[in-house]
Length: 295
Image (cartoon, rainbow, N blue to C red):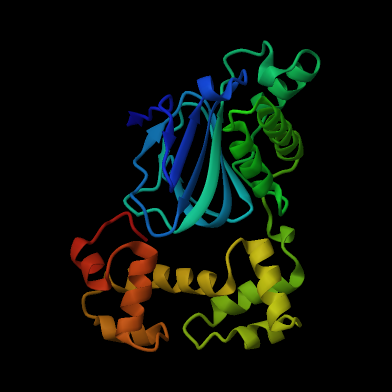
């Protein structure tokens, strides 16, 4: 397993990383922002010497920690412990946007640029944090993104404002006693929609019909679904269908055309186009490669 270097600054269109030297906030080891407009290279299994948090703005990301899979959607925060091995298997990273940051717990002194008792309080909150996946409030990922870009400014006034936003994010999302994300975090109408989608995945899932099932107008349904689930209904449905397609493609007795119609795609070409968008491979390429860890 590899220890990933996180002390080299990067500033590319799709991937940015600021080091502790650039951030100059005691205890904040690094911050990063990624925006993948298409599937991206797989995340090899690795570890960090620090506590790491990933905050998803939109899309989805899969993580494997000690051989257990976690699926992260928009408005969710994922945590890994120091020296804990994690990655995403052999799967390419999905179209998504996320931020991540690492906290160095080696010293409580002047933690996050504060003095006692505030520094001691925040240090203990991070030290005792135990929630692997947490649903966070809508708008908080954008708050963290605003903090990231303000902290990257050369102006001390902007950096100071970014520091304030960072502390606000931490106080709202780290300094709480909330437990693991539960099904009850979603409203009843969206629970109904999710259940209906799973029960009718191989049917013609019309957005208007799904909205009617949960008593909402189509526009209200789409907005509320995106708010709570983190992706649009269309993307959620397609991602489930592609996950099912991966399983069917392992059965060589089934033709790709048969699988495309089984999953209710309009044609095998449409199926192939969507499959490649979500996985980076055509169905034929996926079947030929037979990656055991992609599912």
